[in-house]
Amino acid sequence: MKQELLKNLPSEIVIDILSRLPLRTVISCKCVRKSWLHLVETQEFVKSHLSKSVPGLLVPETIFLEEDWSTLFFEFEDELDVEHHDLHYKLVTKFDLTDLGMIMGSADGLLLMCKQDDSDDEPEAHLCNPITCDYINLPCPQVFTGYEDRLCTWGFGSSKMSSEYKVVRIFHDLIQNQENHKWQNVSSEVECYVQTLGTGLWRRHASRPSLVHTFLGNGVFANGNLHWLVYDLNSCLWISCFDLETEHFSTLSAPFPWNGEYKNLASLNLFVWGDCLGLCDNTSANDIVIWLMKEYGVGNSWTKEFVTSHILDNFGFTSTAHPIKVFRDGDILIQWNEFFIFYSSKTKSSQKVDILNNPHVYHNNAILYTPSFLSLKSFGLDVSTF
Image (cartoon, rainbow, N blue to C red):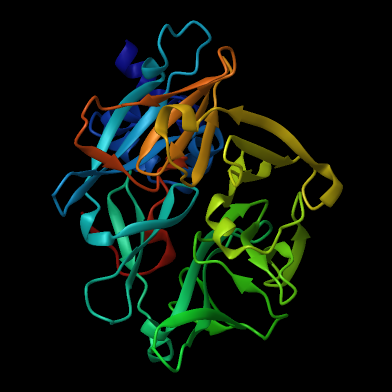
């Protein structure tokens, strides 16, 4: 009787049920019925599941002295009665993405990845979905030659209205010291190239005002725009925005003036926190300050949301802080160099988090990741699997 009931349910009801299930359960359901397998591959299911999908933690891990790495996906156990902070993380699945390189950006479950070998050749770029285990190559045209003499930053996201996925690459020429032949600065002249997923073509973008992109981070995707921390020729700090719908550049103000010291750029980074664009400032020797833009695009809506003190008391050196998540109990998860720390709002103290309980594992470039079943086959390109 139950089997007959499931068999006769309308597809829209089955899609709604499946899209509410945990990720691993959905994957298991694909193996139970062919009809469910086909439903999971429909655009209706993909959109329904993505609208309900909860971001988790995607962590590339490297074992000491080993070249290969694994990428782990954790769900957050975000309940108020969790006894220990380490219990906030539940391992869901594990991927081997070594051949695809490092994560440069993420949107709707798709990852932009880049791999640079030991030569001066142009790095290999890929888009992949670790949940569906497929990926595509993004061939780079001849115009990108001479990469070793340029600073390159990436960006990836989807446009608000047309929902087109686009990859952006921005180049600066490096300025060489003529006496010792070392790279000493970055030119303010910019070249920008855009590829709309599915076309296979890179388009050179029109010229734009001279702003220097730092090499410390790739584009942060929020509100249909990509964002980079930049400075102008007067050493004023700005946020450069690229609208993925109109493909126009604009600038947003930073939450505070910058003193122009280049070394301090390593202690500033943009991030996304819920629906807000954020900036993390750990230029101070004592505090990490987290700013949030409460109303997108409005400069005076920047708010100093969190100040975490005494981080250095436990770790003793300065590093770039990458805020990842605020839990319901007030704990803040932060990536600090190659490991994680959490800051307790109750005790005003910080502590290292060893998610895997393995002191020989290092974590790099962890991100909040929203899993999806969006198939790269839908873009009409040659798809490979891993």
